[in-house]
Image (cartoon, rainbow, N blue to C red; front, side, top):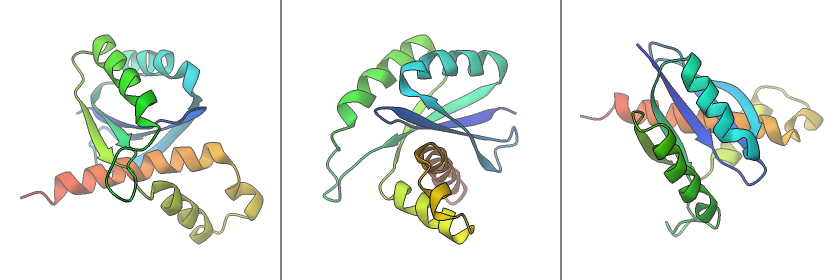
Length: 140
């Protein structure tokens, strides 16, 4: 089987998470400078079999797209051109940063570790991926 890769796209940094090849467990992979993201993804997908990419869809509480969508859409369009054989799906990412911070607190991380924005981004990508996996498991 192949992996599913998740992206929590940010203006400066982007969190990346992947599943195991059996697509059971979502794990944080890394955080990449957004300017280096395309190169990272092209290299990663040349080394690992990726079945699909899920991208966090930032929405406001009123369900409208957030400001960051104007950066994400052009990136996703470029990604579709560079990796045309890998489907891309959107996943609502509301509250992922809040959930990431709560997971860090629950995990016993000290305040200084919780201020590591790269770790928050990676954890947010993991939450996006886990949410996607759960939505597919429980779909009738």
